[in-house]
Length: 323
Ligand code: ADP
Ligand code: MG
Image (cartoon, rainbow, N blue to C red):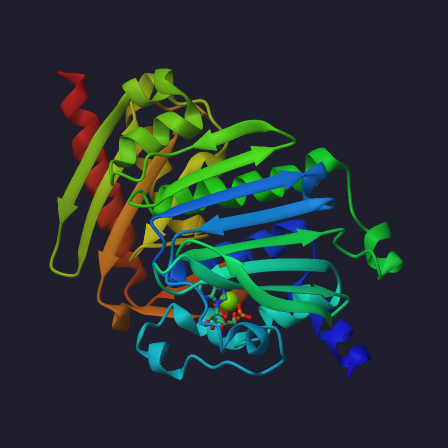
């Protein structure tokens, strides 16, 4: 069983950012409005996620760290949960198998919660603890017992880059959640959680960039788009600075980014790229999320229509700035 845990862990826990991803997604699933992420040495020394979500009930805490102990069939309605269903109940046990875990959680406001401690998946402590509602989980010494995996880790800066990219994407897709990311004592990003996307853009790209963004808005029969795109004269960022959020979920889609770039290139026939954050809403039936669950890739059943809609909406906004 110990070996099975470690093998499964290799699939879920590739590197520190995969741990951050699983834990922060759990915090979001728990309805948190505030998520603090503290990282040391690129996540290899410490990953700490503190949230103010629903918490884990006293009776469920130990089970949450046991393989296949939890299930989430009830949320299958949401297409995007297919990703989560893939690793259903596997993240916490997998992470615990390859690290030292300490988790304090409370599911009410009584001030009393439970604390659990594990190392390499082995239970070390399980006791009452003072706690406010929410979950505070610490992952220490990731891969301490799997030296082969540890050897594959890149530099602290590379691992931190993956973590911060991930937090930026989540902040951009969830402006109503306050995110804080700290590395070795330095605050890398802090968002307010007041629902204002422009303030998230300011937190990530700087207030200078945020000031030069244009609001984008548009609606067709099938699609609704909102967000911000940069002024045509401010294009210069890499292609990766185009963020696409579909129905509240950050996705990777080259075609949508390309449609936006085309709108700029009709005005500005040079090879530069915009900073943009596009929130697009559509019927879930127009989406196919089975392409590659872990990479947040989707297919659209009416892709040509969607791309035309994105390009036309952006072109209309950009032309509006020309006069
Ligand atoms: P999954 O998310 O696929 O159900 P996990 O191993 O990630 O599996 O988590 C197991 C369970 O523990 C979750 O289903 C959830 O009930 C609970 N849980 C984990 N993290 C949190 C959290 N931050 N807040 C509340 N509940 C949590
Ligand atoms: Mg999970």
